[in-house]
Image (cartoon, helix red, strand yellow):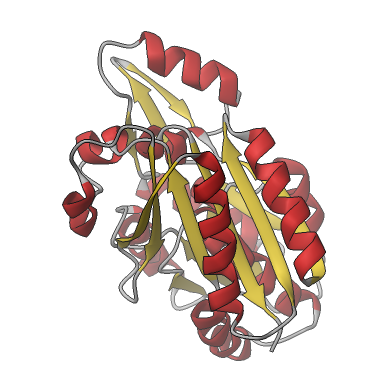
Length: 283
């Protein structure tokens, strides 16, 4: 990480940013934990197939937990060795206690660490993290970058499609989505994040083809007539679906950057097999 930046960028593993990309952009990633029985593993240790095989074989769903305050303290110490300040962006506080751990750790650094709630997750978070990293390269002050991030957060949208609500329901993350429970034979459910960063239902569709068509319609609504933007398409054991979405988006829009990513173990523990699209329209 360049020493002439006015701040360093820290996030958590629910951003689903690949290690190579995080290293390239100078982003420190603090892992959450996924626990099977008595064994806790940092997010990212298991490959996606390994994680799903283990989850299928486990008598109970894995649980997840936020990083410890100590893990954040260590990350902030490393980051502050490279820059005079830190902007630390995290999964929505409505979905995880990660923000609380980060804020508690930040108190030890006399105002040098600024913690920012993305009100999102996965690449809805990652697009904001990359914007912060760009702001650091551009030489913005922490205050100017945080002001810009508020606007970026408002423009960043994320839709998540799940094949089943079982994991979300059993994990207690379902909230308003509970109205969608019931007989879901071949029904795909799409969710987004509301203004408070909590899951809210979008639509139920029958079958994969209809689900993809609906996802693209939703993206078009969020783009609101704009043709240019950054997009990310994610998958958990749904790679072929993700590539179809990627190709459709590339054909429809002036894509300045396109990311295809794997949902990590912590996100997948709550969603099961999943696909997602995050977008950041150009201003």
